[in-house]
Image (cartoon, rainbow over all chains, first blue to last red; front, top):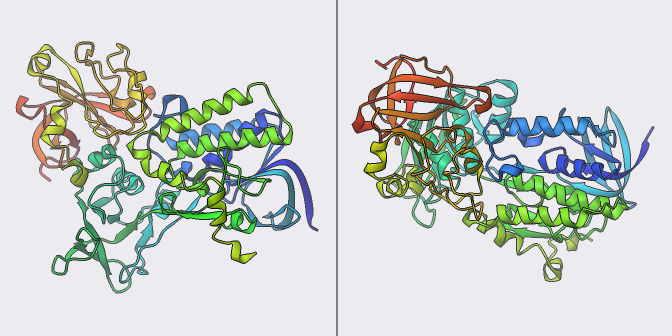
Length: 374
Length: 161
């Protein structure tokens, strides 16, 4: 039996963006369904044991896991929100219906508006032997360690000195794992320097301008050969060095998970600053498909605080379009956009600002990367 | 260079260190936050309004040393664990610490510098881990004056290691 469920708003993805989007719409009395692939809400927040940066008014100083708990509880207390966990959105169809597999059944959901907040996936890196057991993505290590209490190994080489590489290094140290080194191809540390300093002062060296040449080992990782890079990121022969380790952790970037958006014929554009293909959208996160909004990492890789604000903006706008108007919508939307702008306002946000300048406007719609599929 | 190694340079440090005169007056916070990141909880943590309100959330924190009492409230508020309190007259340093096991008062532990090198033995004289700190303990150590501006972390465990 295929069940058809009607709702006001369908939110796909129960991470930071999806949760705030659902709450914002439900508080305006919209009926909301959240479809979440994992067995609980929270997305990446459920692994983030560190304190968040950002504005105090947007939960800065609070640990990610506690933000997830707080939002989950709020959602559970809202009768307007129905949460389907261990549910996967399978596809978007021409009759504007989303199919979802849930409890071994195939369901159809027809929603007046859809917010796609599917997050991101990790990028892989090419080097010899990168398929050896012991080579992990940073997300996998966080899941093993912070959700299930399992150590990935005893001696880890971290690849990538962006915030994820630095934070996961710190979490490994907290779990009692030895972090042998952080390797970064760029000539400078990409993440916040306070994160770099706090692992550096425990004794972990950070090698900027270095990369992994190969993983060493027969049946599992026994170490890595690292090598210096020149300013054009070319390996400098003769600078190879062996580091003993049983785990190589890759934290080399994320890519927005946008397959549903592509399928729903949202115009897409490739923006390296945002991590890959992202949908063209307006300032309320509405894509070129009038039914569909996007929020969070699926809209471009950024911090969770920005994802939560985007979720709120999209949730508010979606609720208004469905007909749940409230007096404060204009003022509240303005406030959220102001917060988001402040967050992205500094030098750290420069890359994001440059990326975002490429996702708006008709000229960009013409560049739709997937128009040839139609 | 900080951006290549994660270790602040002496120039970086000079920009956030009060003058000798202020140091001699008693405890004062040192905020080792060197890049403009969107973050402001330290401002809200200060009961004496010694940390300037952020015009732009991306600004680096600015501390008014004359208003700072060295109470240490800000230490655990900083998501970057970048705030320390130095009590120069009493040879004391307070630092944020998020590792287990926590040290106990009276323990002799290693003092590590900003590069993670064990440079001296220090004595733990206070361990504060109240609920409001949300698992960021604040450890106060006593150490030789010459290392007060060098030590920024401790290593708990056998000193012989």
